[in-house]
Image 1 (cartoon, rainbow, N blue to C red):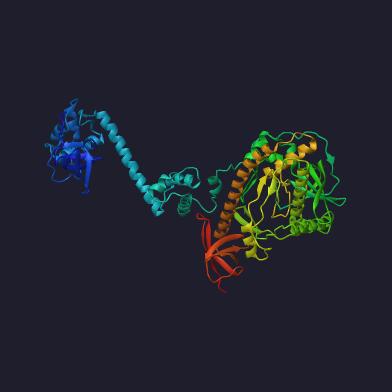
Image 2: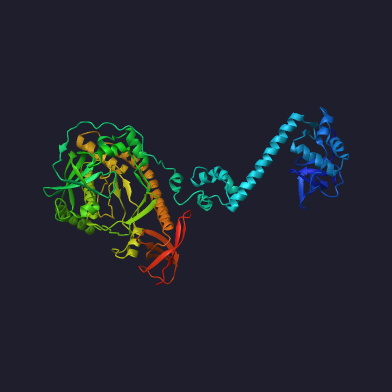
Length: 608
């Protein structure tokens, strides 16, 4: 093919667009681009179409007649761009040269290059290409119509399948959303959630946060080993009360009183979940139970709870701790036995009515003395509002936890067991996961709600480690959590160690325990984070379902002109801008707006 020389005034292709050569000097070519800008390029960056001179750059290809006639004329002949321009347009001009190059670039009727020559494609190839092109054009039009319907909110039933792209992004299943990109929307899960709510593809009952967190939402599906026969101390004649929240499904501790001692019985989970077993490794990877308002996901197969939960069978295998208290209220482990107990289950409300009956009436003064011991040792009492959030039968039910003596008594009993077993483990050199909390950065004992809020801010996160230390918030040293092995892996780990010691079996080393703690703690932190987010989500759903809600608001923290406010009835925190309110001021508010996707709500004061 004849090569067209690059001269001043020539028409060239630069980056798929037409350009005019203004000048050539020292190997540099100065171009004028379609937008009027000038550009200096090298010869290799351009393709010369016509020597010119170009009076103006072509803005669009020339209209062509029936190209199929030209295709039939050429058959297998190879021609130059100039020859083809002459055949199609009866002229070789800058405009016709650009038009032929455009046809060649489209690749429908012709193929080849400026260097090797241009050939007509076969009729079959042309027909196939035209079909594909038409299909692409139809698809483009349909996509544009879909995007237009999404913008207007007037969806068709068949549009829902396309919006799975947005749903998957909102659920954290994909990293981007093509539809949101076409809508020129910022690609965040929050924006995707808001779009789906606006389009009514989702409603308030769609909770995207578990999926986004990437946490397993099914219970472990592992075979549960049989409970082996072994010698157990029969404590079934002792009255043992498993006291928990109404509806609790995993009772793993109970209390008794005998011969002046507090007995804390713990479900003997380590009898089935032995170190290194498949169930143990699964529990370690999960870290803890996940408690959401709509469901509970267990770290152990439900069959383990059914078999070992205290009070779920006629008698239950347990690890039982007998604890004494000295005159100051300090606890000591007098006895630890692998046992069998018979438990009666009570809710806290039921137990509250039996505080004047045995064994509770004997336990109350013992545990009061233990609480005083903790307080003398710097225990921090923080009483911020707490609520139970449940999704039940298409409704969100929020109930404040009542302040009950029975609840405090059981909590003190479990802490007493943790302190006594911690001291025992230290004396016997049993590596266990001790719970340690540094001293808080607070002054004095908090008494107001704002003071409690500030005190919580000043507390460090509890760490779990094999090196013992002080748990400043509880006023205990050392302290180990051992009473919830069905629910928390750290408790199960401590339970396994103490049980192995009692049975004369080989203990896991401190380094092994540290490795397991690290893995379980990483997992449980993600669970606790998800629980907080999901609880807040369902509180917002509750507010959206109850737009007439009113309640008390209390100012608890000021940062410049921003106040943190607590709604005690919902245990919900939010921020407002205010300069006129003081800490602990109270007023009544009602809902202004609820933003489920943004995880926020705004309230306005109720004027009397």
